[in-house]
Amino acid sequence: MNTKNDFSHDLVLEREVPVSAENLWNGWTNPDVIVKWFTPKPWVTTEAEINLEPGGIFRTVMCGPDGERNEGDGCVLEVVEHRRFVWTSAMGPGFQPVAAPADGFLFTAILEFTPTDGGALYKATARHSTPEDAAKHAEMGFHAGWGEALNQLVALFVTEP
Amino acid sequence: MNTKNDFSHDLVLEREVPVSAENLWNGWTNPDVIVKWFTPKPWVTTEAEINLEPGGIFRTVMCGPDGERNEGDGCVLEVVEHRRFVWTSAMGPGFQPVAAPADGFLFTAILEFTPTDGGALYKATARHSTPEDAAKHAEMGFHAGWGEALNQLVALFVTEP
Image 1 (cartoon, rainbow over the protein chains, first blue to last red):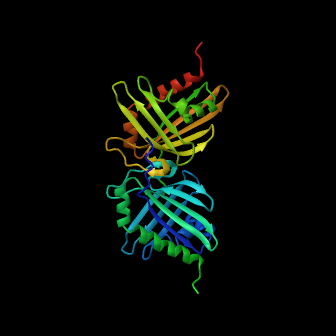
Image 2 (image 1 turned 90 degrees about the vertical axis):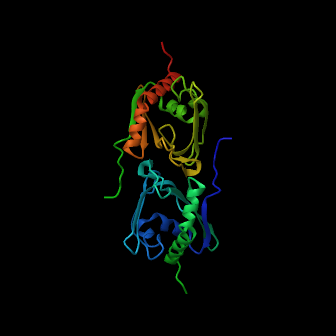
Image 3 (image 1 turned 135 degrees about the vertical axis):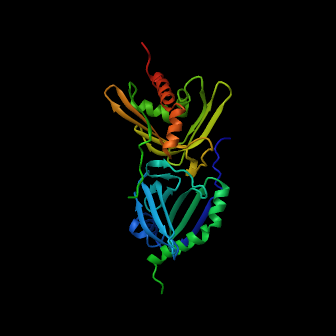
């Protein structure tokens, strides 16, 4: 009757990877590690600042090959060590709401790492305000982009034969 | 250099009250109690739903004397029993970002209850995206409205002589 809870338009990337939940956690929450894989080449992540507590900062600076610069101060929401990490672009540190960009969208990222025999199940969910925002994110290449970034994260821990 | 963390335009209501931190907590987090004080008369809060965990719903329905109806599904952010309760209108349950209303604003409410000899120090902070949004909230009567609601909350626990 009341609760909307319509998550049907979430964008989800789910894949079993040969990397432990602990290493996936480290990849997402350690600023020194996240800069190594977060953006599909030729983009690079030049800065990261992560304060691992609810209300803490989740900041990244992403730079493109033609001088593009995309920076954002997000907010950490949930910290369940090695298992679940949630942050949002809809708020800055201290839970301060952010005004939505005129031509963009806001989203919450829910990262879940579940141990498996050979590594872990990696699940990344991007949750948006509206189906339209989710469609915009999908058209921007959510699946290809987050998938390629995950390849780079996996490559940090898996040596090719 | 990076972090904005400019909270200078927070709206704050701070007052020492002759009510324990536990009772203030109960007033804010128990749906059966919040409906008794949340809206200054002649408005009434007709429904409340609160799921006391990060990502849980914070829903209220407020009705005015001329049939006005103001309802919102907010999101619980921080739960520190008896001391600190944070929720936001900028997200719905499950940390889903909310599209800002065209003529309104979004805010995060930070409630803090600190025990004192005679009761507790009550501190309510409303944190907005921009100074303009804070000004809008102030003009709408933040201080008078939240202050009168607090009077009603106190009156639940203090019997006049």
